[in-house]
Image (tube, rainbow, N blue to C red; front, side, top):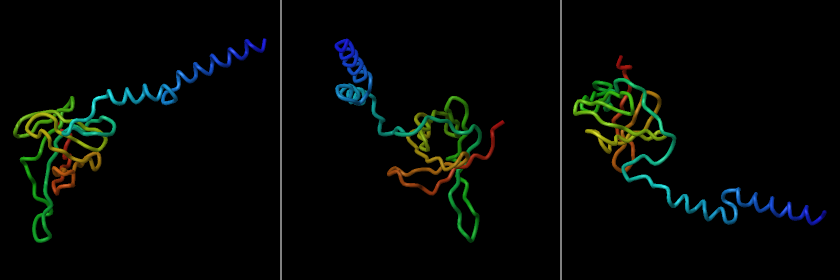
Length: 144
């Protein structure tokens, strides 16, 4: 009877070791899986959950000065967000990708432009080096 319990314990320990990821031999399999996953391209957002922007008109502006206007509208940067992660601007239409708080326009006239989501209705344009630019885009209407 003792032999039967020992065999049962050995078999259950082997099964537990085989089924637990990242332990012993399973760790090698996990690292092979990680290596086989596609890596983010240089122009793509690299982290966070996929999301969508709120639909509607997004107007972009630069800060003004104390002696004049509070902001200076930049109509050429404005766009409208539609369904299926699409946008329309004066220059044409395209597609965007939102991962976490990073927005990247992946197709169309704004291709490779990057923004950081500040809130539900505000975006800050990013410079090529990833630093914040002065351009701020704000959702001004639902587009209905």
